[in-house]
Length: 330
Image (cartoon, rainbow, N blue to C red; front, side, top):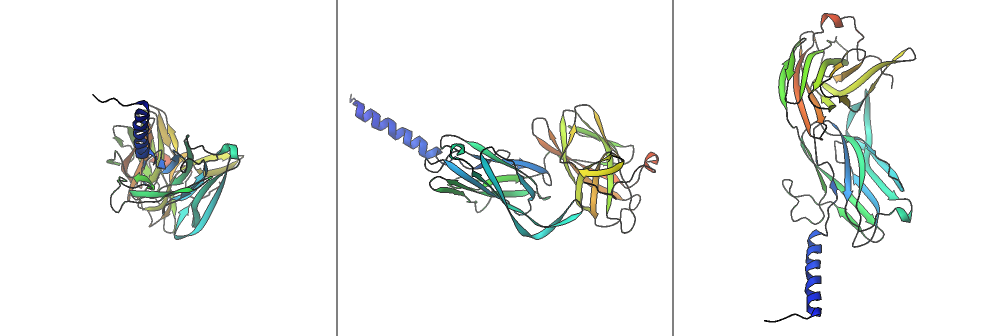
């Protein structure tokens, strides 16, 4: 039997450590939430797992993919944040206004040397944006700068979503509809999915030239959840809005989400929370069928959606209720 002396043992041990380290050195820049539903307000965070060949990270820049709307950064203590805007190839509507330029880059740069992200640590750089209405793959390029050198996370596979074999892959977000159920809900009717019950849904009819209206219903979640967003092919813009009195003035504003306590009916009604359908593509005459997709997230973070077909036909009690869609006071 042949024995190894201490020097050989140390050499072998360091070889094994080096092999292990080389297989994990590319702790990719990845999103902490790697899937989301179309048209939702998405909070994402890029996780940086190491520096640049031992050097501390001093800057992180995220490039927003086409179709990401209204991107906003989350401030980080000890870091400065700058935004870069650019003119859009395809303008979009937001709160009744046409947006022709939007944020295309968000950059965090370290404010003090002490705040730099050491090579042996990790951290997250968060942002929020409205996602495209269509499902698909969104690749986010991330430029990581360090005291010495940089990592440009930019590689995208020629097909599919697998990053196997890529040394510097971009961060991937899969935009897809999850847990969809479909039902027609007319005034007084109801639909029950495995997660939520929706009842009494209706849409206020419009007249020629009217470009906005409201959709209303009662939603009861079986477990604590959130209504994240809404979409409809009849409207260029669909949002969750709240209407309330403020010093004798009726004001209406969009909200990013609506809490749905477990087992408690939350009513979306005229004069309160409701769904706002704006930039209508054609008038919604009484009796018209209006497809609507509600997008939810449960307490565990799982996302799902319910697809409805509402009628433009208000119940008698709503005939004289305040109409949504006229005065916007933000």
